[in-house]
Image 1 (cartoon, rainbow, N blue to C red):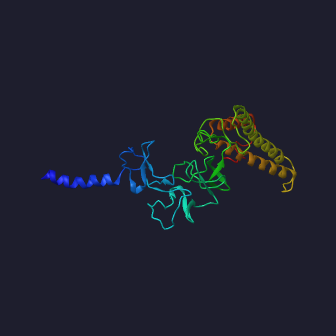
Image 2 (image 1 turned 90 degrees about the vertical axis):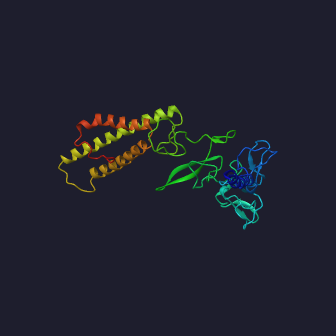
Image 3 (image 1 turned 60 degrees about the horizontal axis):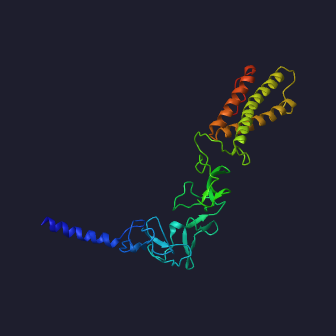
Length: 302
């Protein structure tokens, strides 16, 4: 009796599984095509995998093949219809053909088989996947500062490997953006777009320049301190338009800018650049700080 009962329950289940068929990417055989036909899948005779039954279809994240770029479509088609534009490829039905939903910012990338953002557009995915909104294949997504806001923008790839479709401009250690942790390496962009340290020689020269900047910062603090002491011992009356106050104002601006330059260099989180800042400041204080009136009276980074 139990055997008969189990059989009654198992047979409909097995029938349902066989009717449903195999999902996208599952192994199949052309002689016994068991792919999920309601999802418009068919067994590929070359790969022996369940793939879309037509070149005009592309799979979405649910494993359903729907209309791809340029394929006939209908605005009232159901989500499982072959005339429903694949929204995971960022397509929409324009007229009677599938096209990019935002043609002013997107183009259809045949390499990615999806609508992708053109160079200069924002909103790209930092860690691209098959179904994320990515840049075109010959560009990469970079996190940059636009005013006071961090944005993700598509940047043109200058060094592009056409064989592997890989952008060689993307720094490996930065992982498509500025690394927010201490790291080593010699490929950095320091303060300005033109200050790049791609070659070892330029990187070493940059370390020397940064060391000198930090050393000069301590010297500038000491110079201001000396001028202040000389003025304090003079008999001249205080006034806002005196040569002393104007000179101190100019030196204050220079010290202010230099201090924040050093801070931004340290915030690249490159170990070698941070060490150049630290050693330069330490050497400068050793040379000038012993005779200063106060340890950190004019330090803008404190």
